[in-house]
Amino acid sequence: MSRPVRPAHAGALLATIFSVQFLVALDVALLNIALPDIQSDLDFTANGLQWVVSAYLLTFAGFMLLGGRLGDLWGRRGVLTVGLIGFFAFSLAGALATNAAVLVAARAGQGIAGALLAPATLALIAAHFTEGPLRARALGLWGAAGAGGGAVGVVLSGVLSEYVGWRAVMLVNLPIAALALVTTRRGVPRREGRDEPVRLDVPGAILVTLGMAGLILGVTAGSEDGWAEPRTIGTFAVAAALLAAFVVVEARSRRPLMPLYVLGIRSVLGANVFGFMLAAAQLASFYFVSLYVQQVWGTSAQVAGLMFVPFCVFVVAGIQVATRLDAAVGPRVTLTVLGLVGAAGLFWFSRMGPDDNFLTGMLGPSLLGGAGIGGTLVVLGRAATAGVDPRDAGVASGVLNSFRQLGGTLGLAVLVSLAAATTRGSDAASPALALGEGYTAGLAVAAALLFIGALLGFALLARRERAPEGAPASVIS
Image 1 (cartoon, rainbow, N blue to C red):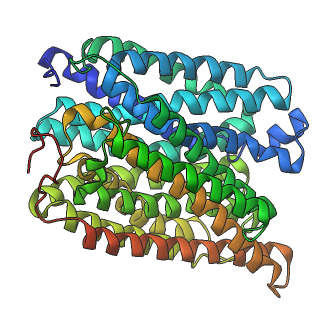
Image 2 (image 1 turned 30 degrees about the vertical axis):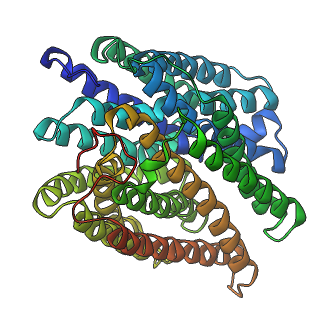
């Protein structure tokens, strides 16, 4: 069983949870605005440039479940240490890259390191904080780091690439990783693994890693070649076959990489479905809004980044509301209400016009979007691990992160294709206005995805969780 946190180390553990989650969320959006500078500096081709993003997403999603399970089996302190050292080293290698191949390889390495880190943060909360104010605070920090990290990534990407250069954007990771390494050594207990002999489910690890990587490759192929092309369909078919084989192996394994009872818990299933839709909407929205204010309003990269500061502020406000609302009415109602608020904010963004400015087009949507999205992340983390044995918290967190990663990647690819089609069919008076029509169309669909996600979450989440058949005896109903 998990070891209780001693009060002397609770602060260090909270600092670890926040800094690691912030680091992972930051890097999902950190290079978005810096991509044009990277392309010109390292002579990337137009098709090659997307691999700066895709290489990270491919390895991050592919190794996520494995990273979560390694933490459960071998202890999260050691896994976090390896992941943070790796993230530090690959970030430094990326900042010093002299050609495109080195940068893409460094980004792939960051993704593997991130897959070790991301599941551990939520697992630490599930394993070491019982219900009460300290657990609520931990979940609040986890949610703030997840929502705020993405928004801060956009801000820093614009400001640093404009005034210092894109390499400084990569170097941002170094002090955060170093700080997290210190707090990990101080706050995370040495012994967290299981008492029985450790045996990793190697067949399951290989199948799920290749299957998840195949899904990301399929999304990449769809965005490049088209969704009906043989390459795209074939890649998705292979990925589906690998994941189906993974389920069969897990059902028969005595020590599965992912105990299947986890997805039999309604709160976990509902949280993952909601998380998929939330990520699909959120990542695409950051992308479209940052492009709209630069290419339609004509703002500079650093000003575009700074426009996201209010979103970060309202995330904090949303977390405070979510904590109180969750205590009063539970996660089912809280996720639904705040999901609808977030969807309203994204829909408001979709009403941006060429004559709007920061006050009329950004501030109001940021209030609703930041508060709704930030608040849902706090409750999402709790729901995704409710009813799960603390010894399986890492894999439950890995499942949530995998669903969110797939949702963000698939949502961005599909909505970018939709926006491009809208732009091509536009009869607007200028190319900039045609681009704006495409971006707002993408934002409107993103709002619809989050709206649907909120309704699905309400339908799937149970009012009172019960332990499913086959779950360990320590699962609380």
